[in-house]
Image 1 (spheres, rainbow, N blue to C red):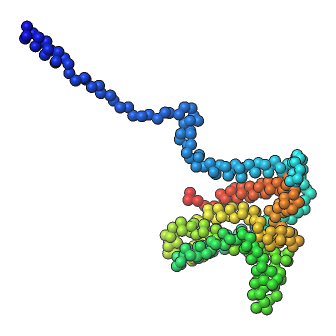
Image 2 (image 1 turned 180 degrees about the vertical axis):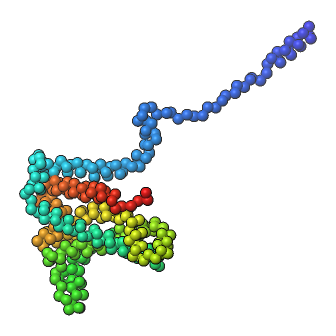
Image 3 (image 1 turned 60 degrees about the vertical axis):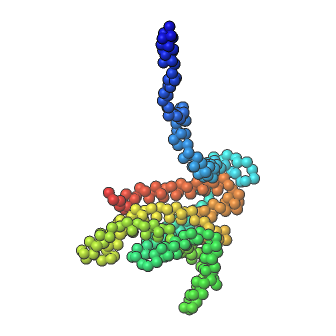
Length: 331
């Protein structure tokens, strides 16, 4: 009996043991997937658009929005005092048929563009070729020559330029040392526009830096091979430098042409806002300013602005269409 009980107890003790531990496999935490195309796009591009948000605000609020409003106002007679009144194409018809100042300002602007841009690019290229020879202190020269491009469009430089070319200015004082009686350059209709062209040429720093970068990309072995063949420096410049530099020349020409069409500050300061003498410095932008803020014809000024946009677009398109005949790329 005792043995029987002992065996039963042993069986019970054997049956009772530590609980069997269940093993659990830990699953990785999965991020909830966005639903719909908008959620997926926001997950991949949302942070980037958040960083671009200040630019979007500036573009739509300060560029595209005002441009659309200006296009609408160009079909009205808005004058800042009354609500815009729709007049259709009347402003554009007046520009084309009954505004002699439009033709005068356009002729002055075209004269300025056709002379200032080629002369500035030629001068900038000449300076870039000289600097490309590896002279000492090249970074210092680059900074000094680039400085006029930063200061040239400022009011202070325009005031200084007016003083230089006045009847008793520094230019006439230097000419007087050689016995030459110089005129009042800014008061003579034959010379006033040339003072603005010289000021534009003086701002050669920006295209000069771009030309210098383009010259650094031309392989030197081409010049060495040309020298071995007996080519002079001038022939190397014509046959090697200019063809390989045509993409840079094209870029500078387009950019400087657009800037020349938009020139305003020098003409406004030197002529006192009148465009004189005898409309010789009446740039298109200055005439637009007179119509907008002198006579408060905002609707008409908006039409003038959009005509300028079309003119610049046509010049740019013409440049791109003719580029294939003279611009040479690697292919």
